[in-house]
Length: 488
Ligand SMILES: Nc1ncnc2c1ncn2[C@@H]1O[C@H](COP(=O)(O)OP(=O)(O)O)[C@@H](O)[C@H]1O
Ligand SMILES: O=C(CO)[C@@H](O)[C@H](O)COP(=O)(O)O
Image (tube, rainbow, N blue to C red; front, side):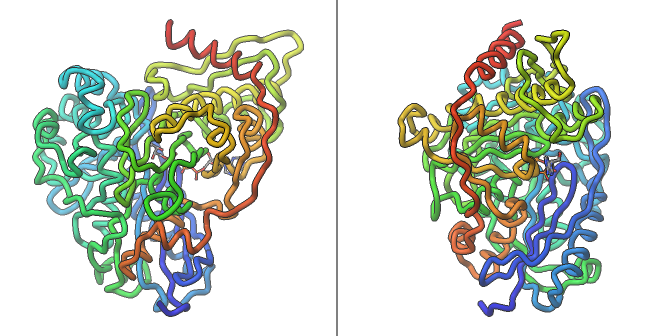
């Protein structure tokens, strides 16, 4: 591949769209174009207009093109990684029939409970899909739509996830990948295909879904003339299948079959996620057992309240996000959006341990601690799903890779360091999801394995932060309040 070619990786996540322009030969990040999109809704509702994602994708690509100084003619491929699980329903002209129901919309919790029971409980689900339905899963959202807006469900000519909605706009071809499909609860990680029985349970016609192509780096088509004109890119360049945002972060870090296996990652974004890439198909009811893009798997735990929730607490207190001190006796579980891990969709924020001398800075620190402990609690289960013993010194000393917007924040890094007691590895590149998507685009152009491409690019490398002695007093204080919430 000539060194002058450029690939674009798009991260269409909850709060914004980022387009990474990457030198395909060296992996050098030339520029990242950004554009925000809105999330609306109250009382558990979280929705976004897919047309806004499409507009934001155009703006982010235009900004990246300007800032990179790259000639549009140098661009050879593009791939989209998107926030997982969102339900997009389209009419027969490909227009959204309503706003997308997002991963953090908890209105679908009762439908998730009913689906779990309908198949005979959690074990039956993990055996088939790798995951147990919770409000986030697409199947629960589809059931919610059927019950609450039957007209929209009956009129749907196509059902899409966020990333494959955008891929189809680029290539004019319907396609998805095993990674994002595995977050629907109608795709089986055991068979690597849609599960007819689960589609029957959801009353969903398979013809409404995009075909699942073998990997996110599969070339599904070429940039259409219309999309090319809109984006200022050459028509005919490769469009990859793309994937979900967590799977793309794994690719960017070089995790998977052709790279690093069984090493933990913590992503601090709107969601907090903890995961690893492994060869063993996960089937733990405590985790989502996703497929990765390349035939490996991604056991993952996801919380609903991470950076956005902590920023909200900082705003309530009138503090900047790094004006925090360790929480002391105060415990703050910032479950502003309900919670998914543990599965408490109706939860709200909880504060305890206040004293006369508690400071606003401690309250903010307690919010960081509450959010961090909530996601870190699942780390041992992720390691067990990889077939590892979390207490094994070799396993305990594996660095935790920190990604997502929060990994740029001093207080996040120090809080995770203190509460995990692990060495951390903070990649130089902040935009691992977009970079992973760029590697998928490079794979679609060259036919090479995207994880191998990303490993060669070296994007996973970064700063190693040595461990601190683990703050077990805070850990136990937070986990005991959390346990009370679960039991209560
Ligand atoms: N320097 C920083 N310090 C702490 N948090 C940050 C910093 N920069 C960005 N963030 C947080 O990162 C979040 C966005 O991260 P990102 O991974 O892009 O989220 P998402 O993928 O959910 O849209 C914001 O909620 C913001 O609070
Ligand atoms: O639901 C999940 C994972 O199962 C979330 O991780 C979403 O994929 C949204 O990610 P961010 O926007 O927070 O990156």
